[in-house]
Image (tube, rainbow, N blue to C red; front, top):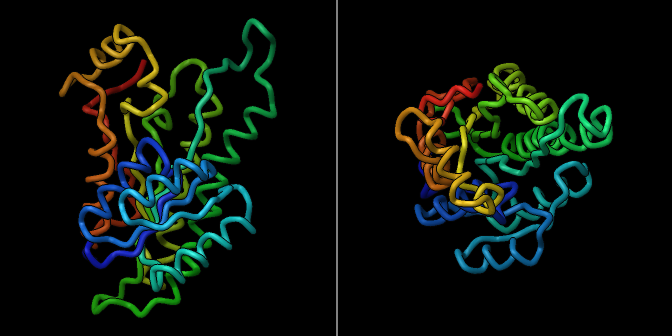
Length: 251
């Protein structure tokens, strides 16, 4: 599959990794529909790059069903799904204010893990309607994990659990969808210059960058986007998680 002929939905496409992915895909000729809760920014970005936009709550079956249907109608089908929507909070299991709020844990898992699965399953059902390529392929799903899934730090219990779930479902989902010609991959980014990190003081950013072995800097969202584009085009990649972290192992 070539980016130039790809028809993709990108969740969390109004900022960070999702925005970079939407821009990269469009630059290389793909049809893109941005799925995001931020209607104003999402529509603005979509208009600026010639993409489509659908206001979407990834945790809602009805919302995602409507968004996928709209995207498929506007683009003439669906062949790629990149899940970048997610949240992160730093809260210890037991901290100064008591035990970790269970509602915050549930919200993190609901958005990061359940939301990704919700979009993936509905996108896969739409991809299954496509005519297969000469090699039998119908599409690819790329979910966003994190290196926190493997070596999460203090305060990352909820986040690491949600991203560990992304890692854990990659292979079985790829096996589930193999007969339909749909591939499933995950990217596990390290520390990237997203809007959340951009708000930190320069000194704090420099300290985070210094922990990365090589290159000693924060990852750029465009690098995630380029890897996502490579996965779309490299048809033999399936059922695997790729770390994108400059050899960082968090302590």
